Image (tube, rainbow, N blue to C red):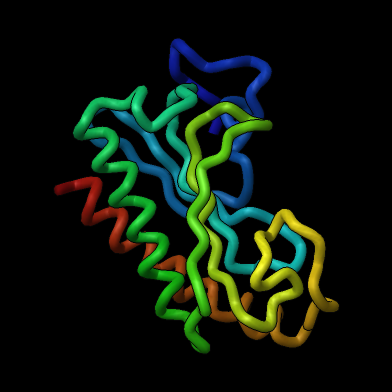
Length: 157
């Protein structure tokens, strides 16, 4: 997806590229958003909900847009909570310090992951477990199908 909004920023990677592997994209009431799977080494269940227009803050959206955005974040979170084993925690973050384009990180965290309990951006606490990561990655198509179904219901609501 290349940005189609009049306010697209030519220097913004989220305006100019998908930002990861596209899982779902939809429009509602003229607003666009997408869910991407982020390629973050060591964290197979790392997703982002990306607002289509180049805005920096959640408060830049109308009330109905904010609700749709947060409902989308919740749909991704709920799909990830159904993973087996269940995540120890779902991390939600909207930092935007490096990329000031509204997006939410939705990350399933496990007690065995290399950084837990520290944030994914902190130093590793232990070596990565490739076998555990592969088993988790094998579950992602089903999780993404749950996300897509929930997001389609939201889009048409």
